[in-house]
Length: 367
Image (cartoon, rainbow, N blue to C red):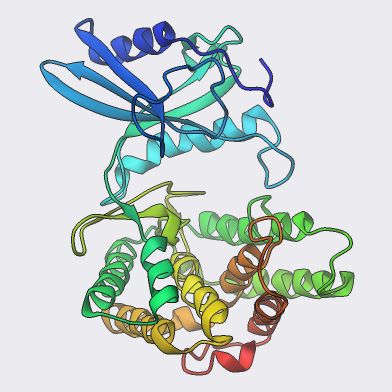
């Protein structure tokens, strides 16, 4: 099996696996790549890693859909070895169903070289199977706002609903100083987090030189030592709460996807992951935090602080914003940003780390 060329996965292998989960009286209806039209491509010979597939089947007279998803291998971000990817997927299978409003995991398993789906012990590559959820990703709302510049009550209600959701899940606390320290250590040193992002930037980068990355890394290490003393903040978190992991249906009804890195962590992580996108979209439209995105940014923060009374979060969010800024400023993830937008994001990441308390009313000075 080649990680680059994909796996020869057969319909029969899928059928046998689904039957092992749901019983003998299962009939596979169709399989298609998520995002494509059902019935346009039933050929699984080019099954690709990192490409989710929808499996539709009949069971006890009902039509059901599940999503079979692997992780794409590649250099960097801590996913280089099959065991790295296995760790993530096995953990997700355990953690998805513990978080309110998260898409449900059905099972986790793996493939043999032949394409047979087997128990984890004999596996060569791993996957997760989740329920199929209808909806539209929240980033489509932000795309629309960037195009129109017109904010509606509908948009504000969704923003408040997301803020309320975090305020609610963050109420659940967990007492483990060692785990909180680990999560802060991972923020700085994990391949998916700050140091992994810094290493992903090209050696010859037109916008900043090596000294910028060294200064950011040093500042983040200092922040690790500041934050590790705040273990009382360890809370239930999503871990990757951004607009591409939120599926809205009608009104404020939504489901979250792809919980990441741990059931417990720092609440500031979730807040930064979402609200950085209000800044990101605003920079692209206005060149600063302004207009519709300024309204949403402040609305989200003010509602969260009112509901939680967690003013301490303003003293710990800085390295989480720096991390998320490094994501959206990255030429790996966003190769076509304007020079102005990319430079302002890089400035924001560095400047945030210099402030002991974040002032949500004075964001533009940090660009």
